[in-house]
Image 1 (cartoon, helix red, strand yellow):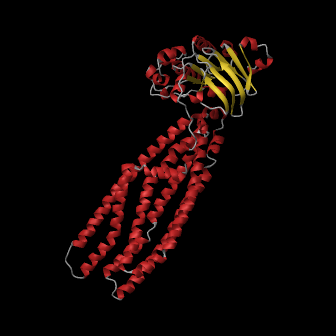
Image 2 (tube, rainbow, N blue to C red):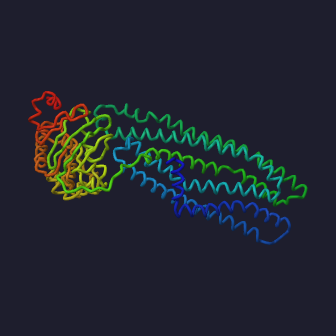
Length: 541
């Protein structure tokens, strides 16, 4: 998909409010085209001694119609833009969550695209409609000049190439500078989120000033692009301000000549002057073209994410089985290469290795949080890639070193039988000490790293799946709590794949998979591997 394609799709899904905007803005444009003619007729009537009120009443009616259309247009613009923004944000968020960790972009950059770029792209329906209707008055003015006197229209047509060149230059320059502005904005957002995630480290290291400078380093570039945008608009407006009066003077001179020779009435002269101004008024067109350019730039920021294909899932379901997990000749991210590993159904395997060996990557592969570049991963004989999405997510549960909690309450965040799962994870005592207990909102719960990990473990224990993957999920627990949780894991009948950094965690597992050089160097019980000095070095022994 291209940025223009996304803009067109957004316009196509404009809905009822966009349709109402089209109707009301066309009414406004029609009233604007008719007003000079009606005013000219009213002036001719007054100068001719007529007492008829038809034309003055018609003029007042058109003014009222234009005012009503303006009010409804403003309402329609807000509602259609809000609708388009909601649609784009829902679609973008669903796609990002569907991609999972495979987005390849920092959280701050994604947030900037989800918030700012979608809002910019959502201007497309109203901007496209208003651009079209903004052309109606100038076009109507030209037609009216032809009907009044062909020489007026010919005089006006001489200045049209200048106006067209101004519009083309504005669209070209604005599109490029807005795209660069949004890119700089995204870099600032990405750096800010990174810094906020590590704000305790920043405070402890006393590097707040340095981090502030790093986050705001793209700010001069952002300001420069913003100033450039205004300069472009000011330049085009200035040139238009110069061109429009000259064009009006030329039309007025010809109209005066025609009046002097009796080929044009006084009212016609007044109408011709107004139509010349109407025909050369490119301000509304420039404004809406600017919005369209911004919408296209916003869409261009969304496309790199939306173009990433979502993981494909097959139609398969799992047979009854103990949860045997197999890695066959698996390669991934230039870290793991031709790795083979079998995690017996109902057993526990601790994965150990030096930092950067690929332990967390292996954990991610076990539940398709990442896909291998080569090889196959099977669960009870069925390739993970062929499983239905719901089947896979129900089969494999996770606990992480830094879990994120979602839900209105802690009970919602844990899920299932929350209290039983919390007792298994040694989280029940501190939850009950909270004022609202299990009904406490996660965002209002001050927690240490160990307490947060216990809640993450409770959520994993509450998961109904046959495989449980713990990615360094006990690293912040004290020794006593880790032993208690380890005892629960030992009694758990599910298959367990545990990323281990502590000797005690490896010792409690049925088998230890020692990863070195991208492959499984050895897979055996901890006591059999312990005599190997290289194995002991993994634990700093």
